[in-house]
Length: 166
Image (tube, rainbow, N blue to C red; front, side):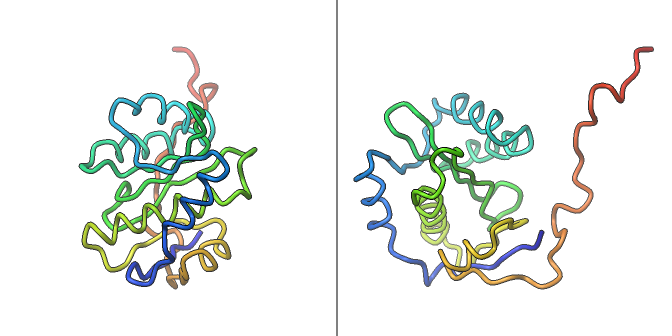
């Protein structure tokens, strides 16, 4: 999967996206440190260990590099930045039942606006799945030759059955 580049000085306005979510009872906000275990447990359950590990890294930054979408006490989505490398957006994900409601775009734009305010002019979206979504949402463009990019040689835990008892 390729990486994509985003011009942070040409982002859509965040306020209408947040307002549209608020009208649906969804709050888009930066995560708080005491929520780390709740958010990272949710990310692991929804999207796996790798993204859970990446989300943990976002909580080590000041300000925290993780935005969340919540309805009351229910987590609906998350978005992180500056995790795998500085200047990179991701991972991000929305609960299956909440997809198609604009939460993903609101989280994306919130993270990217924070990156711009922190001094970045551009962001890289790493290992993009839905390239059309990112192109439409924030004008992201493909970075030629970026597959597999920084993720080349990524280690993963082998299945438990691959380790026979001694």
